[in-house]
Image (cartoon, helix red, strand yellow):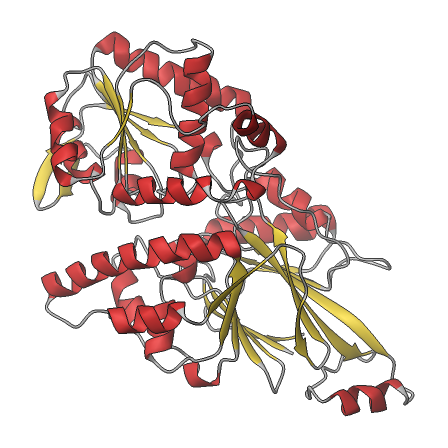
Length: 479
């Protein structure tokens, strides 16, 4: 078995990992590179493997940095099967068309052909099959795949891949049952090996979802590290900070802007705000969800309560509309979005995109970043090079849609609402992977900036006594 890292190595975005048994080639995720000035160039580059030779793709979750290049994979010849959870399948059906519009617009502005077209998206969609958590997928030849709950966003998964190997750790290169039987009757003992791909792990406990599943019996682990060098606030602390940010906005008669990812972050905020209003924790103030994508994603959430935790399920069964409350307005159309300007402050605007790389939040930032009475609250990861990161780190002037915009408003951060596990959470999850008779042979640390990935790899080695590495782009390992 060979594992090759073709994306997400020492980078937060662009997850793309290839497992090659010698007869079966499978990908885990095929994501878009985002945030940096080189991202678009990377996305248009040819794949470092032949898409026609890929038999399976296993999708951990529906964020674009994990699924965004799948239509290009189809365009370049992939015709295999794609497996993911049913909830992820439904979210992909909304996220990919929305992403295609952005890609087509960028291509038009830059004068080149788009990364993919509608026919490629349609063809890809026909290959996607939704499965249940913990339902084994038998690929033959002793290879099985199981999706576990990652607790990151709706339908997110940890992908477990099992295979049969001889005790000398030589990998079985054939999928014929007769070969398996002949090996089992020879002097070489076949053993089950396991590798786990974390995808993105949730910041448990979350308002909506179940905690991330722990794993055990792992021979190899591929773990994310977006927050591999940081620690989040506790859940109660983040709730109090959100309340304080809203109260300060009301006090200053300003506008609170919250750049928010359409999947999970917006739904978590709605859930918490609903609870605050029900408990009279915050005064009534106009709150706008100014994101057509987030509105569509919220509808998908409402169709999949089987993914929610016990608290959320209880509230739903008690008749509480957990994504709605007095003062909330969802502005789906452009005309409704423009009307937000007519509502006098104080008000709260939750809009995409989460890293201010596009979407309606840009128009609100142009209008309110210069206002010292207003504030911008970051509740998610801001990748290096993104507009959100530049504002977050304290730039006093930024360019938005060709305009120079001064940043005079308050800039606040609330990492506790991140959907990613922090350093202690990641270490705890890796520690759970120990198998009977010892630790995993190797932990591969991915999906983090280089410093975060190396920091987590060092901690896994030093604190847990497990070999760990932050692989480079294109690096290959024999398992």
